[in-house]
Length: 454
Image (cartoon, rainbow, N blue to C red; front, side, top):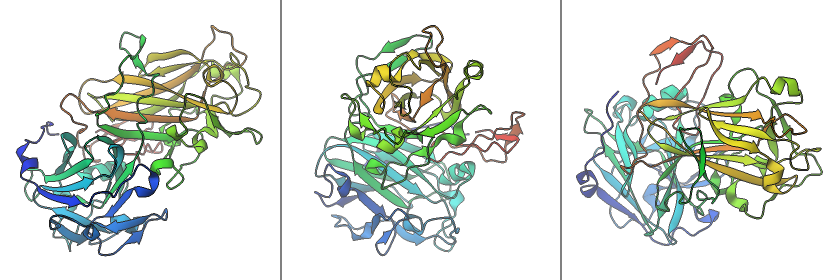
């Protein structure tokens, strides 16, 4: 595994610049950019969203790079935007002019395949991606990531504050690899409000104490979405997910055999938001389902309801819990009180959803900041357990949604390491198979006895 080295600034200065005409974005969902890179004509994805060829934009400079098609495409791979790609053999920048400055989701779509009749092989694609002063990916191998995800294609989602109204997105082949090139299949840009500074964040310290954060995430910070889970419910795909957010089923991340029970809201319960919770924080579909520990108090007291989420070490993370009591008889405070643990540290001693939200069917959330040390990948443990000291009516816990966001480090970087090839294995008697977790589509397959070390 190679050491992480930030590319020198000259790689950006020397890059070609591609400018997109101004006034293409407004501060709403309808004005999102969906670029199908290398495509010759518009197309629609499986969610019915329309994608525009990057060659159809009114660029101030000639479009550089090579428009290529995948030599072969698996039957499970969506044709849009993954059938075509734009390949760069030297640094190149898309320059997006936004009508309204502020935060955006930037999504990068990758299908690591051989392109242009095998002139560009997937194993040669090592590259970096920067957005202005921020390093999003460094010496990145989409092929290694897809291999460890056990998937053919994947998406990486970032959030950037484009306060200047201009987003420079630069793709640079890695100088550390012969015949390296950069490629991209699709680029999506969606304007969003600042959903990251909630005002209620708590810092989880290694000394076991939780401290309120007086100054939260800097408005200019670069952020990567690592996980977005709809707990107890099915996946929520665009366009139903506001800002085209994808919410993944949490089942794959549950630890152990005690996975609790899932349920939906009572038919006579309507989801609404607490006065201090903006409706865009998460869609009502997230709060309409939940996972709890189950009805047996004696069983619940013997285990933690636990999720294992693999993350890049050496970064700080914002961990967001979404809560809503959605079934009777839980209608008042002190009926269900529980503890929240992150990485074996107490994040919350007495979580009481009704006390936080104000009533049944009222959505709320809580934020916790966690710092990690080291390098490579590590497991983030998230666990719930009944709180017994307050003598609640029900010894139980509940969760509706969970998000994990990676924050840039002191070098303005979000880039982690590439995973190791999957043929490097070691015996894991617990039967868990862990794969790379740096996209929204991480898989944990419990049927395999081997844990692939990354």
